[in-house]
Image (cartoon, rainbow over all chains, first blue to last red; front, side):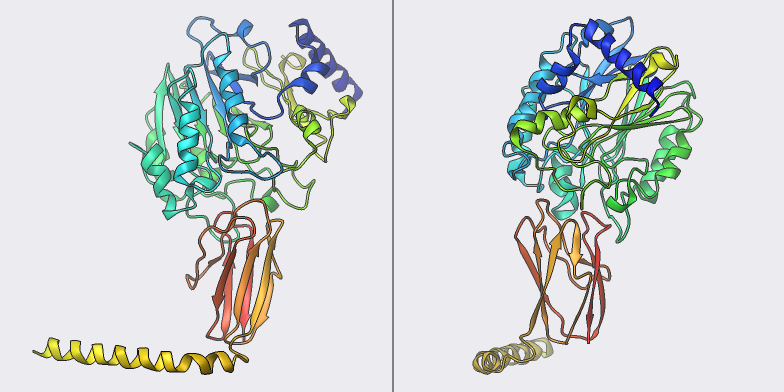
Length: 345
Length: 118
């Protein structure tokens, strides 16, 4: 990264400080897990920011609405990377409930459970009952489909859905499509949507005006982040070909337990943090397993994946932002991504 | 009539086989080689090790999951399929026919392995 860009990011971070949030303090004090993203739809352009940030200022303009994405709760996980994933999910819910502007709904992008056990789903349901937003949309992660081809998941969360749990809905002029890319995975492959779902998707989008904002969400990223770790979806290309004609497309995923994003034409891709445990940046560890860090460094680790999505007008820009300057690179996750619209807007 | 006869013959055969098995149990245990051989595959860091395992016919292969994340062991050709194996849980399968058996983790399909039975 160039010094110029770095300075601009610093400037943007300084701007955040003007909101009363001390950046360094924020990075250090932010709950390392229990995070989520707030999405504000404004004229079909979704804007997001880590929701501990000063959110209220930017929401609530006429016709706008917001929703929250949480992901990878892994209820039932109890290994050193996080011995109490229920507590960190609760932290996420508390943060959602504390927001000055209530989101219209919550999207959970999969891996609700660790082992698809009924008791794990029960615990998740119990916790989510406490969320102020009552409407919650789910897609399964691979951890939710471990028994009986996802029967337990589908019984609980799949009512009215098709196939392995895909569906779509409209909200205030935005068309949302929930896709499942964790079922019937093939040896040697990555995530997979499958022919039947792709046919359905084509039909679902057909006839919709190109000016309809589209939000696709699925568990595994719909763009290839790191094939060696299976961080991508084999047949996502075909799915994306169906949304090309739309003016605003946002793709939300989980699975990789860190924020990443990419803009390609009119399509912006984002992955969310986990509410349970961090995972290493691509290729920085022998495998994608849960990242174990000393307890007192957990906040810093998540601090590293802190990303500011500041979107205004119709321009989005992406800037790689190493965060080593705050001394936060605890264990190999020494990079993050920041979107800073004002640099290019 | 015919059905009844078949049923009786079937029952008798079952009883005979059961008796043979009972009688045979000690001798199987006593003469454990080579059919009782076993071999291990470790699941570590989202990979099977060794990735290719060569064993003789009759060998029982035992997979052990050493990861913090659950995995499965699923034959690509539908020969065997484990349940979900969480940390330290095992799955075993005895190979009684020569051949090559590719398999993968159905949760993380990038994880592939192979058992060659000679």
